[in-house]
Amino acid sequence: PLKDPGTRRVLLKLSGETFGGGSVGLATDVVRRVAHEIGSAVRQGVQVAIVVGGGNFFRGAELSRAGLDRARADYMGMLGTVMNCLALQDFLEQDGVTTRVQTAITMGQVAEPYIPLRAIRHLEKGRVVIFGAGAGMPYFSTDTVSVQRALETHCDEVLMGKNGVDGVYSADPRTNPEAEKLDHLTYTDALVRGLNVMDATALSLCRDNGVRMRVFGLEEPGNVTRALLGEKIGTLVTT
Ligand code: UDP
Image 1 (cartoon, rainbow, N blue to C red):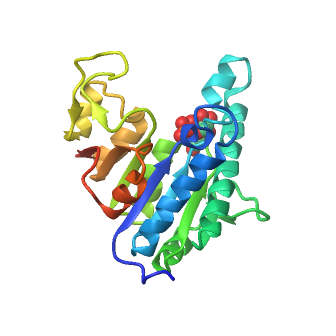
Image 2: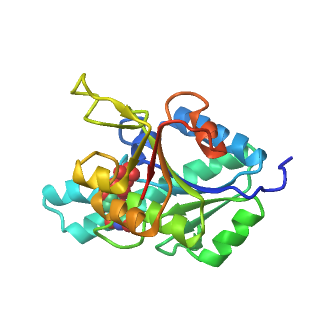
């Protein structure tokens, strides 16, 4: 049984890398585990919206380097995100969580269209809303969409789930042994120092609108639930 949804509303970004477990297609064991962790937070009353990436299927920029038209390749990328949405929806529903998928490109058989007020209503009722097909616009990233959806649906925080890192570092921890994990930084720091948090469009949208964001590693079991509940894990980024 789900508790009444509380007042904490968050937007969780899950990248395609999470869905694919580092390769093409679906790592169903990972998606099942992440869904279960989301369910646990929802049962404790957190309102959860999710933006899903698609890099485990297609990235527009990569396909365009291979000769495809960039905009068409980006649409392929957006369609890939929808498959991830449906997989996550399935595992959440198996876990007893009510969900709705809303896509920025309409496809009535599999999802609702993106209707912000309706998304908010779903969240208020304790349903998890999964946003697919990015912004429906080529040249954008799902990171940027995460920030936009969080703003439009009045989320308190954006939670960026990462693979391979557990927060933002002063340099790339995979190549630089001196790299230190930062507990807190500002968007301006991230932009000026070129820290690898998210793309510049997403960063400036955050900075200009005072978005509160937490970057955390989702491979550690329990971390998705912890982030959703508001534990101070990873790195906090603010204006
Ligand atoms: N994409 C797009 N517009 C959007 C969101 C995504 O064109 O608003 C395309 C773009 O080609 C991108 C792909 O969809 O490479 C997959 O999204 P993204 O790379 O952001 O996914 P992630 O890196 O999170 O797996």
